[in-house]
Amino acid sequence: ERLRLNRLRHTPALTMDRQRIELLANIEMPDDTLGAVEAGAVGVGLFRSEFLFMGRAGKLPDENEQYLAYRKAIEGMQGMPVTIRTVDIGSDKPLDRPTAKAQDGHLNPALGLRAIRWSLADPPMFLTQLRAILRAAAHGQVNLLVPMLAHASEIRQTLDLINQARAQLDARGFVYGPVRLGAMIEVPAAALTVPVFLKYFDFLSIGTNDLTQYTLAIDRSDESVAHLYDPCHPAVLRLIADTIAECNAQKKGVSVCGEMAGDVSMTRLLLGLGLRSFSMHPSQILAVKQQILRADTGKLKLWAQEVLQSENPAALL
Ligand code: PEP
Ligand code: MG
Image 1 (tube, rainbow, N blue to C red):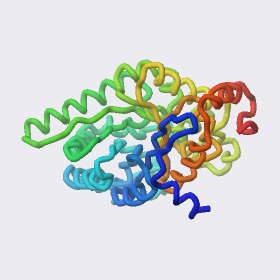
Image 2 (cartoon, protein in one colour):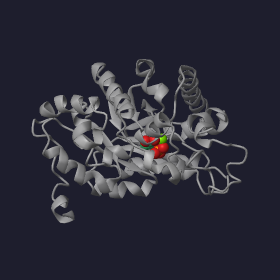
Image 3 (cartoon, rainbow, N blue to C red):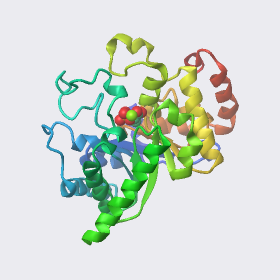
């Protein structure tokens, strides 16, 4: 089966009704771009930059180290776009090993100082990362993606800091490049206020892992409730469907970068909901492409609306 899939590496991801689908890779380190290119990804849809920060006993990478890492990923993609997500530290991705100590005093880390909240709590640290990304953007097409936003005030603070980072680079005489700005939709509050996000951002990326966790109030890393963690819960699908529809209506880019994007049992539903951009672990790209080549989005559109109405969507997939 692997061998048969391998033949699809250079096949364009077109549905039977000739819709072009963008298949992107999720990466954790710059070297992962090798696997992404090998799998036929047309870009990186999610570079989880926190992996540069983790397991270093709290000593964070400085601007130059980050710049070189981002640049390496950009060069690795040979001209294809690279979406760099600002750090998503906290909760299931603590700076160091997830010992009780690392989470000291934080009873609900998933609801606490995580991702953009962690970045906005330490502007010098965040500005360092933003400068590194902007400098790397001089070497290729870069999308800058912000995790876990929920409030308009957080959006404005983030955009202010991006402008500050540019001003600092100007003042210091560094070269930097343009970036497209994107927000992750992974908190229900964000999914329910998509027009606010579209006012400020060029594109959105739906993080179905956290969107599921926060919609269902299920800790994604707690085994004892894993049986209730259901990305196909009608409430989760409704938030995903509405986010995609709103972006399509406003002709703004939208992708899914959570595990759902690489789950072949979900490909047809996401296509039917209007999704045209998927970002996943490189190992899933060919299998998802195979689903796409067999799909007819015209037919899937009506069917997807039926799935949304079901109390047990998973049974219809
Ligand atoms: C998500 O939440 O779906 C996502 C892509 O981000 P992460 O898994 O890194 O939290
Ligand atoms: Mg997430």
